[in-house]
Image (cartoon, rainbow, N blue to C red; front, side, top):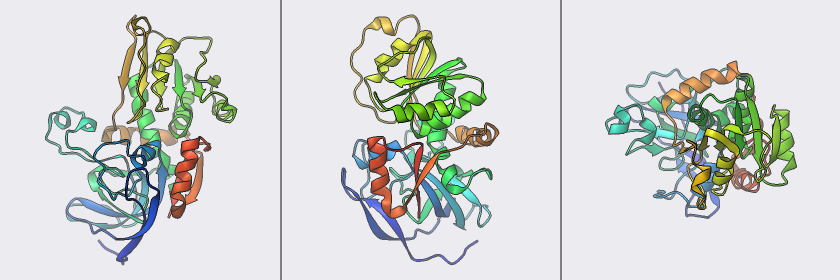
Length: 334
């Protein structure tokens, strides 16, 4: 299956750590066995992209095209791939695993020793075309257009995995009310649970946004709500929030760190971890997470709040994210 595909494409490329993305012309890749070529319809802008741009993740193969919340249209398939032309597929952070290591063989492919990641060790979706492993692509629910589906591919999926790790508690605290939290808050409300939203001190706009999405409490991250939490999920990459969250959860409560990178966690007294409180991290996602969440999102009535930017405005979108000036998620549309 093929269609007329140009030889060149526009892409926003990171050429060195800390530098701006540059608009470049790059050859359009051709799919090999097991691969699919997608015309990018939309690509979400994730906080992990900031960690890539800032060089905070190891072994980045410069130059690299960031972006791992990709919605694209199938335009060509390699041998062994049976996808319909024009089908909309989503491409997440986890882009390839070996299938043979201990973790892959034991249901933990997110921890694969040789995993590759879209927009980090594989070129991502800040471009007009994207080459992906067909095994790691998900059908996009018909309920969403491309820009509104894009944040589901990471903000939604990581939030869902964090929720699985947080357990069945009724009162959940969300630290950092951005793209992931605004999606997860809607799922929690649909499940009949209570959302407690923690934002940067003084960010009344984000707190008001959280209340509009059903939060029963919203306040500064250095405050504690009147009731102890059953669990807390940290989306903000701020290590100092870990002791704060431990103090906010009840005995046997769970604190989940949802980011791939976080500033150093300060020392804290053992007494705030004692009484069987649990502190854990979430790493990447599995294909099971993807299929489960993308089926759940339309049932839960999840509506993503997005701000759309042209591809060439990727640096502006990243800076808006960095400064906390986004409500919901930023999405690039080529």
